[in-house]
Length: 433
Ligand code: EPZ
Image (tube, rainbow, N blue to C red; front, side, top):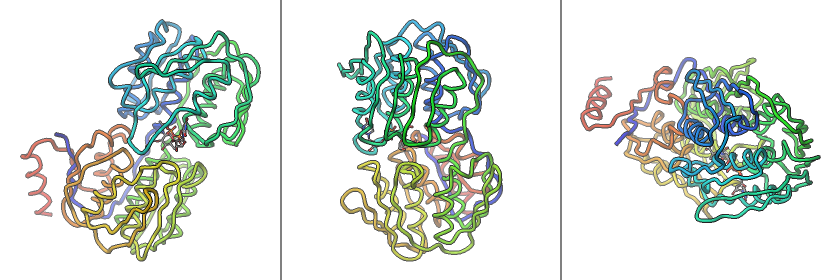
């Protein structure tokens, strides 16, 4: 079984280049099928979720050409199949973007119910509410979500919950609907804006992405373009926090510092030195950090996708911190694993973590419960004394490109291993350092 093995204690130092944003790429790839001419997407992260979605797009009959590791050319002209149902797609969340895109273009779609990280119940009622308001029917039959419409007509839709997925999905469906659609109480995440920017470049008329209200005037046809995905805000944040946790000095390149503002201010608040440049950010830490409180919120609030990483950081800080998870109901499953490393964290009511900072974490054998928790446990392992092994690393590979390679380039000691022999070899090397 594949595992990461990590020897902690080395401050990370140097420069790391951030890949394209996974969650933007997923919406963008689905959007690309709306055109009947080639859409070339660059700066795609080479991660499992993106590769699975590209395969699913291919199954519809769209042509998918991988030009290089980070660039794909998609042409939706050949689509003949609006049913997407394979064993991989069931494991990911963003498969549901094919519902919005296929419904918008062909007025019919059948996609396996989305899976994704197990971080609490993840309903799609707001997606279906939006599709229905546009004139579609939506039902779930034998694990498949089926949406159908004779015609799609613009509507005013108020989302009861701020949802990244529902905002992007209904935007995809409304782009080619008749007349005007107004989406209210929408998500404002950078990836929502990135998908809207691509759609506009393809000929859509979308205004207001990045604010609470998005207005869409339906168009008859979309055309091919070349488009580059924005840098990954969460990958960047993960390296910022890894630098802080290991008392390192890391410059994180290819970022949009504006997207990282709430992370930057939290890091400064707890005692890190953060310098912002045009497209890079440097995080320096040379002492023990202070405690704080954090509450996850939709953008521009503190992202839920950085909650496990800050909990790890605060588990090493002075004093008692409180982290409240307000977006997902079950996103502290990793705390039991972190406790094996000596962290003193108590979860109350399922969504509040009370963290009594300790001076040191120590290496242990842990398993990864989901993507961001996995990245956080790697940060814990890099900061800990001794050797940590992490099982179930496939979660991490869903969303982080070349994670061990990037960490090694900063001086961190991490290997992917799959045999006892490799583990022992690593342990011997770690002992001799
Ligand atoms: C996206 O998930 C991301 N995934 C998640 O990233 C991220 O944690 C999340 O947004 C929040 O930022 C992708 O982009 C593929 P939501 P999504 O709809 O769209 C409730 C990662 O690690 N809700 O914004 O599924 C929902 O239960 C992943 O990269 C409804 O009630 O999240 C949650 O409480 C994990 N009904 C809240 O809204 C709905 O119809 C926000 O969820 C939809 C959502």
